[in-house]
Image (tube, rainbow, N blue to C red; front, side):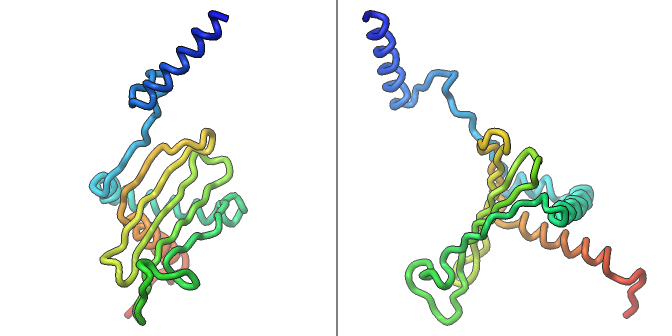
Amino acid sequence: SRYSRHRLRQKVIMAEDSAAGMEAPQQQQKLPKIYTLEDVNAITDTVQFRQELINAIREGFQSYSKKEFNACPIQTMGAAPMAPFGGVGDDNYAAQTCVKSGYVTGASHYVIKVASGGHPLPSNSGLMQVYSQSTGRLEALLLDEGILTELRTAAAGALAASLLAPPSICK
């Protein structure tokens, strides 16, 4: 029928436009927000952020204790029993890339972290991907080069010290 041919022609035109990078406005992909290392440093380099992070770590441990935190198995590449990156390892080889992910039941987002480092890689590197739990869409990329992992580790240590250290410490 004429209606079917018209609809088919519209679909062909849309497919050609899409292939040429000219998608219709209602079909354009919403891009995630991208935070550079500079953006991350500007946000995290405050006393207020550090205190909020320690409180968030406390809440994270509480969620874990209540079995509300869901952690997926860690994926590790480049470390034994897998082949080393580049196919050649030496006695000091320690390079690897880890993919870690998790979420709190009922929270708005989940996170996937990719971190790499170790000899012979020149430095640690990494990023975090933030997804909506309700849509599964990538909403943000945090190009933090691993600094968020370092801050999380420091905050967990500060929390542990505040809870376990004696009230007064003498040398």
